Image (tube, rainbow over all chains, first blue to last red; front, side, top):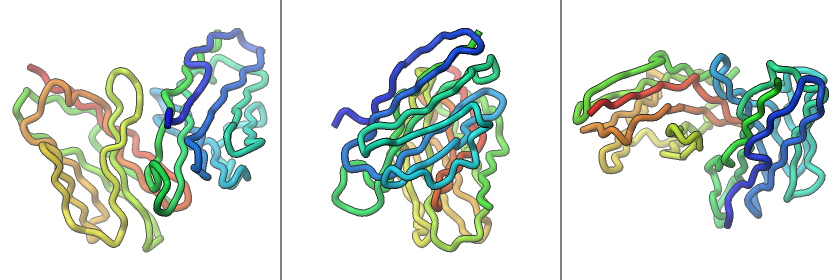
Length: 118
Length: 111
């Protein structure tokens, strides 16, 4: 398996623009997490899904942030409009609980998307 | 509520020294998992170990060892004979329904 795939790896945009970050989970993983990492706040959980359904979005900072998981193999995190304080590395991580599934019971992270908002 | 505390923000040691990274957690649940992840300068998050709440047996993997004590809600990580390549940020995490990370400890191993 190619692991958790995130795109883009780097994004530089101007304040006010829409940003869409993408994540492809490991096949068979039914939990997907979005995290944001900054120097000030560390690793923050933004939202997580189970079987494509959002379970807890209490970490989403404000209405400018939205996340979707239209199917088991794709998720997006959208920021509209973006602001300089949104600059961070955004990680997607996936897992499954149980046996017999590659990477089960361990959160496997993607390489991250580094966002810079000017 | 779940919470993970890594009180050590930064640690600096000289190569070959032993170093222990502390992790204290809070949860009201009796079933949970504890993790350690490493984030080297390249930025990826690398899984090191997972422990479930019913398994307090300590674990050793090469130069790494972990001490899990439910009585003190601690899950400490020791690197024996540290090497420069161990320089990274280390995160402790607690999983119940979601996964919460500590603030991380930046370890610098000097030659």
